[in-house]
Image 1: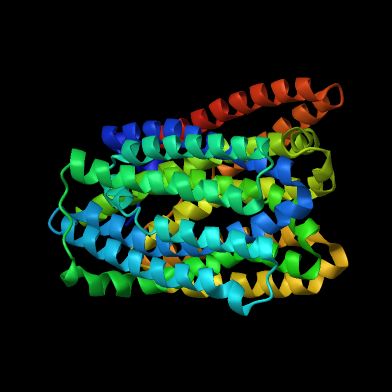
Image 2: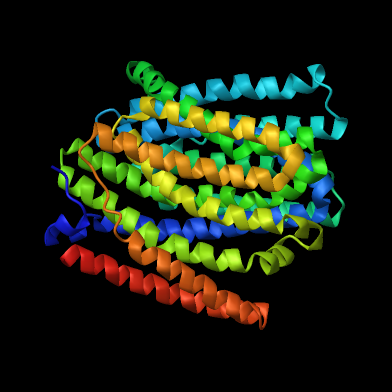
Amino acid sequence: MSQTTSDIPDHMGAAIPREAKRNVLVTLVGRGLSVGLNLLTTLAVIHYLGPDRYGIYVIVFSIVTFLDLATEISLFEIAVREIAKSDEHVSDWLGAVTWLRVGIGVIVGAALYVAPWFLPIPSEAASTLRMGSAVFIIHSLRTPITYFRAKLMIHWELGLWSLSRAIELGLVLWLIHVQGSIPSLMGAKVLASGLFVIALWAALKGRLHVPVHLGRQVMRPLILFSIPLGITALLMLVQLKGDIFLIGAILGSADAGAYGAVAQLPEFVLVATSILIATVGPLLARHLGQDDGDRFQAVFQRVFDSLLCMLPPLCAVVFVLGRPIVQLLFGSPYEPVVPEFRVMVWVGGMMPIAGLMGVTAVTLNLQRRLVRVELTNVVICVLANVVLLALLGTIASAWIRLLVVLIGPSWTYRVIRHHSPYRLSTRLLYRVIPTVVVVAGVTFGALMVHPVLAGAVGLVAYVVAVAMLRRSISAYSSG
């Protein structure tokens, strides 16, 4: 019988060990720096290109990111899970995931490169796509991050990521200064990604001396485990990227560019969600491998409670400040998509919770059962966009995203409940909902005076709200 928060014994308060907490701290700092540098790069590109030309860039980059994340989520999560469980076949898993990822990279990258020969793609977009194919192939070699994540050595990945982001930012700023083309902006990613991959392998082989074998004996289970997860990842990414493609096809590149700019918010949250997955996934796998159900339950519940504390109040503040934030970050050409940005705030707020449900289900080897969840969401996403885009515009796409990001984790949790003994207590929600209303009201009142005052008041209200909700968690745990 599993335990919810109030049933966890006192000694379970330390369910998350010191190495994992250190991993979270390092990840927060490193990922914060990396995401910050990437945000500056993205904003520079958005301002430089404008909605119309940025539409070309974001569509091509979405294709590359779509395929890249699909292979990473499927192969890398399985490799991380297996390496975290045992040290027995680490070199085999590393070798298997590397050879398989490189094979996929070469095949898909080549297909992207030759696609403009067979499709009616404008020359600038074709050149950008070919640069994107090089990014995809290079990313095939970043498999050492599976070892760093599984062994809670995330500082190796994040330090090198941050350096790579800084190099890319410098290159992009220089290209903007010399009025570089869209393909040249993608070329900056090629160079930065190449340096990142070289540094990863230098750390794995030169510094840590980790051997990498061919991995024949684990290749078949890696493929079998990854196929359902890969299908799920593809379906999930259709929900994340598919609306941009549909907007470009139905409404044009200018609308795709404007919507794609504010749609960066959930994508940055998705990157930040890797903090959660990189730490919680190996930790859950370790407890499951040790047959320690109590600690598995404790980690599952405490991470969920922490997300409820931090995310909804933050979303309330950003939602209220939507217009001044869009004006500050993206500029006046993007003001028409302020309503879409406000909806995207809540989409982003749900994504870490979806990540927790997903990594828990994968750890419990329930990935096959998630295909139906994501397939249903894809059908809703595609059909609703096709029907509503011409009638309502891009705001329809934003609301559709919110709908599917609510359905996904809710259904995934039902799968976890049905096929495992683990349960979540949701009574903290009764404190979260009124807290969010108060935070939003206080911030809105300050916004009537001045946006800067609203930002300061919203920050204070958020800190107070988190502190109060964390005390509620402590009270529930001790009660």
